[in-house]
Length: 128
Image 1 (cartoon, rainbow, N blue to C red):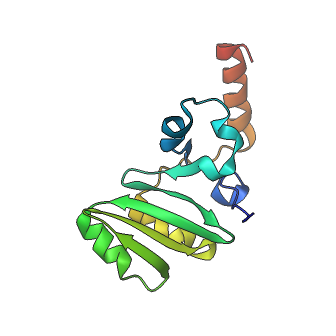
Image 2: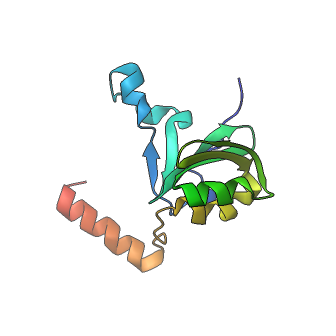
């Protein structure tokens, strides 16, 4: 079985992590969808980044102009163009180059005192 890049690792910390939309359609259930890292995606305004296998990721974007531009990038190893969308495979070392294409959601991770305040607020508000 091919290995999968862990999108929950520190390398991708701060990016919004979600689950593949098709999981529920394929299984009829949303149960256990978070347990398989192959279902994880980094979500963005114009698309998402997902595992492809080994040390490869895929960026899937919407928009015909961006799709054509992405297909011409030298760091893209494989590209599938559709009508107004594009799926491109690239090496994990080129992750930073793919971010603007999908316009990934990012929030700077909290640290130190700010993290402690957020954790305390969560315990207070949610009874954790």
